[in-house]
Length: 148
Image (cartoon, rainbow, N blue to C red; front, side):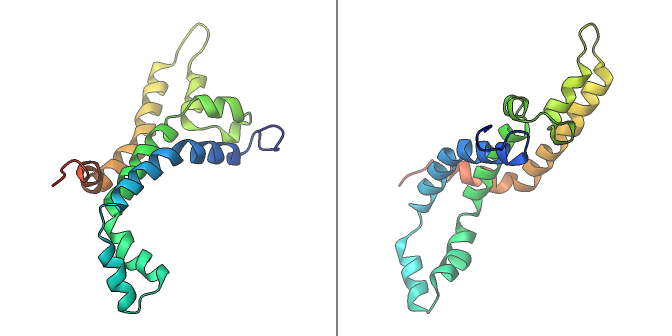
């Protein structure tokens, strides 16, 4: 990251998280797309739909549960990550929430009240994400469970 000039920038984290999340995302989405019948896209082509139209109007609504699963499975570790921001981010204004909460740990004392308040505030976006996407998340996880 230092040779690329990405040290102490958001791009170092974005590239790291994209590279770490891609294998699982490809695995989940490929498995889900294989269950969609090819006849759907062929029928859309016959009806005059473009390739982009097939993707946007046919495939995207069908893979919404898989996209919700990929979003939640990838977002939770990224949101809670401490290690990569510790390595790549040096400036105070770019620190992530878990890294920023480390200032509440002192050598001889810990501000437990501020630490727990920060933990609650840090968990709210994850909780809201799961609440709004739980139906699709559960559907995406169980879609490949039953074969028949």
